[in-house]
Amino acid sequence: MDLLDQAKALIDGDRARQHGDAEALHSTVARLWEAYLGRGQGLAISTDQVLVMLALLKIARTQHGETNRDDYVDALGYIALAGRIVDKRLAEDEYEMSLSIPVTGMPD
Image (cartoon, rainbow, N blue to C red):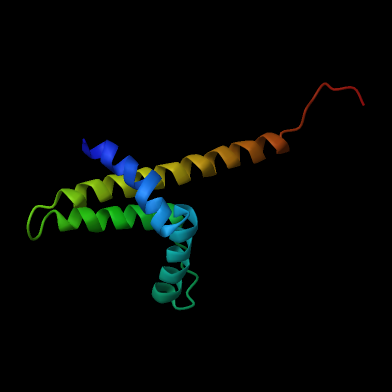
């Protein structure tokens, strides 16, 4: 199985079943990191930022120790999940923006 297929199988299959909803899980991680790192300073970390940073951790692991294919698969999975969350947010923003656009030329 190639890396992309394996990453997709993980995020849509085993990992999804094992850890639950990815967005909810990584949103919780974001809140915990905010509390730990921000210590009341108003630090905001988004769910997609958590996923990108976890991908960076996996990328860093490729530079140390033995070569491990799973690091590449996991990094791809984290990036794919981040992309899904950003796509969802953009779609929601576009929908909300469409609700606020005034319709002109309509009879009262």
